Length: 313
Length: 313
Image 1 (cartoon, chains in turn orange, purple):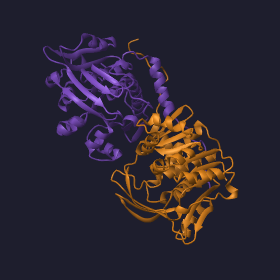
Image 2: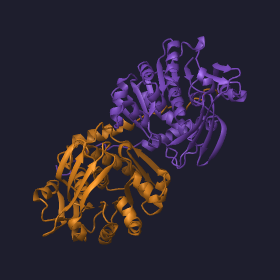
Image 3: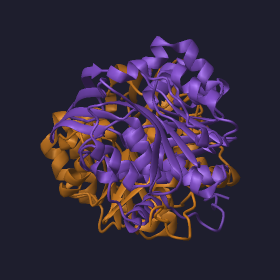
Image 4: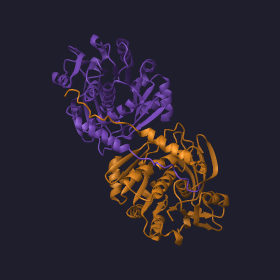
């Protein structure tokens, strides 16, 4: 197994200024695994669903060769459901309803054939669940963790324990400031890396993302969209593209990490153009190649070959 | 004359979380001209001062070969003074006091030998003053304009008139949203360019800057500082580095504009490391070259040479 994805399989009801979607397919594991499947093979999902989860929705993962052996179907249980409304600027949202349902009983079991997985992507979940998965994998090359303000506030000790055991944290800017209790993002990054994850990615929405690795900082641009149709899943899609690129290359270096951030950003830029996982079902290789090339054009500049001339020298 | 700078020569009293400076040298024309002088020659300033303006402060411009023939000294008048306090995050500030003084009578006279100037940089001033300067120059290659929320709100018609006559507007993100009355920065950019300036730069503080030119968008990273010591003048320094680079190269193309944004960002990154104009008095060519190289490292990434492999193809 190349990539193990732990996260939710869910149904979301979403309102944006552009429309509504009721009971649309969602959940971090869907977004992560689908996005990763465009870059890498041998992807497995560990999650939990109720018996209301549509077989055709699991089939979407199978269609992309994603292994769902690790998805537990709880008979008589109901799938996790989330409902939210995005504000006009789409940067903030209100949660209208959260029905944890089967998530309350989620005790992840990593199938035996996945124990030797190389890349582990821990979607945003209770840190205790993330730790349980880390206990079940043998010697992964690279472990990636997502989290959110809810866990920063409600289970800070468990979160610290998880952070102490992962290689990489992916977090958004406001959460980074909250976790480090520091308004300076750059100083917050230093403090968070001191908690464990040597590789840190801070997502800044419409302002792109920052990667901190070794003594380097990499600033990735955001895709300049006039309209974000539905931001749901953008962060998970980023994580999926990121881990997918790393797994494809098989090695984790500052160089591959930079490119992985760009591929994650590119996949996420597709995700927000449609409701739910729709944009992640039929991407072509050409579309992805064109988009990452466009990211390059977005940030490319040339330096003078001659040194700067001191005008008064 | 290569660059004509119109702006203020001022004394600022500043409080930041790191300290205080009383009656420190400031004003947009000082920052713009000093920054530009590291990249280009033949720079002239048009401004107004009172008889309280220190000769040694004018000498700082002369030391960098900047022509102050266009600086009017109003006998019996007092120099423009501004006093402000920055909040803890340094992104917001309160103006404590503004004494316009001689600025109230500023009727700019462009000296005859500067009429044929190639690059005009209109610092943040009453749009009527900016228009008066545009009336006095003959056929500049490229005109750049800065503005702020005060003029957007108090003199919208004059501002629109000025925007209709400049090639490039430099503005910060909140002001761009206000000017275009649109929360989407990318859509706001389109609306502002329709008002006149075909080249638009939106400064996003700690998130870098966006350049819109022809059908291209360029996203420049911000320098990852843990501490901003004093943000005063950062925007003007950016404009100075930007116009200085363009004037040095003598032509305005998407390629030189991208590099100019990076040089502007690099100069601004020095500015915020010290109070007042201090950081702009003794930069070396090596420091600037190193900093722009570091900007390159900040945003550089490599793409795969082979196309993305569709994992299930």
